[in-house]
Length: 206
Image 1: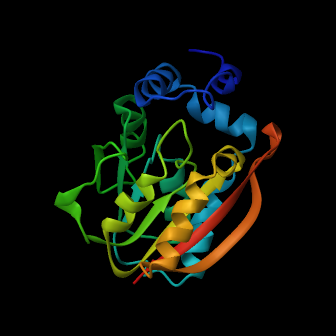
Image 2: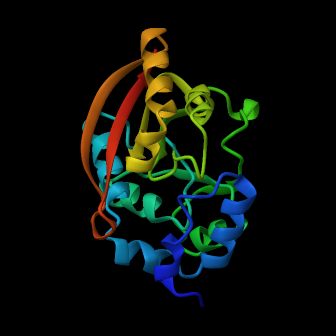
Image 3: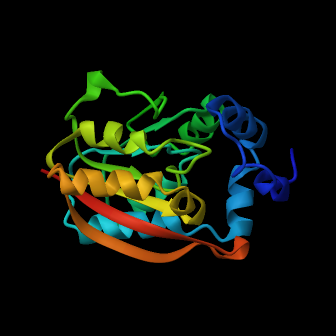
């Protein structure tokens, strides 16, 4: 198994999905050890923010970029009962399947709209997913399209994503155009051992 410490060597420098997918395929079995070493707290922050925003815990939640299932475990711990998950990496999905916490799991490319699931969910979670190595700012639009009206979208933007500028610009566009309302925005820990912080947002679709 690869050294978990090596997971962070290049992950924030990739510029294509293929590079990122290959990295996650290599480190799938070491991923959770790497996150533990980094002190990864964002899944819990996102799950708590979704709960505080009043999300219906009996309605299905779509966990996009679910990875090995750490975000799903945080949602389950917060009391959410029905979880679906997507990820670009089949190897990471295999890790998530082993936890038996998701109703359904499937491979998905966050850069492309999922028209089959348009307006299908009351809540969507994207913890630690939206950054240049994983999904571009347009992924925000694709996630919003899968929400029903008044649905809640919780997501994080770490320091790397904020420095990109495109994500915050996309959020302002959604708010200014009247597509969504901002319910929550808080800066805090993301991966303390790596000196990384993140904003956690909750948007409500109009």
